[in-house]
Image (cartoon, rainbow, N blue to C red):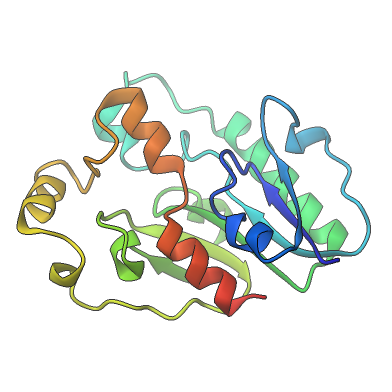
Length: 190
């Protein structure tokens, strides 16, 4: 059975299509497991990594309490994900984070997307680094995915989705991988 590691996987939304298809999905996420001390099994087929964006997101400039960024702490998680990837040498791997400051350390991303490209009604420019087949974009007109009201709300709030409410609830909701993207990524990387 093909093993998929979902590093910093939270709810497991990104790896759910793999699990539904019968893959052996292992979600490595706090508080149960910390990627910084995780020892992966051998013969890992694929790795999905979504380290927290707290220290790297540009949205933090607008919505934070102006606390200084902890790049060292944030990079310790990114470093752990990359070490697991290099150790496993999987058939494919992808690390995601919103377009922001992480490219200062990882270089140019391979791909970026908005959730609405895959049928999820909000905007959030998300970058992917790695060795993977880019998922083909499904929608090219956001008016086919989002209502005028949704578009207006996103534009007025720096593209923040309103389906999750506000504050911490919104931040937690935005951290979940959009289901349309997850399914399309799975179809491109089986």
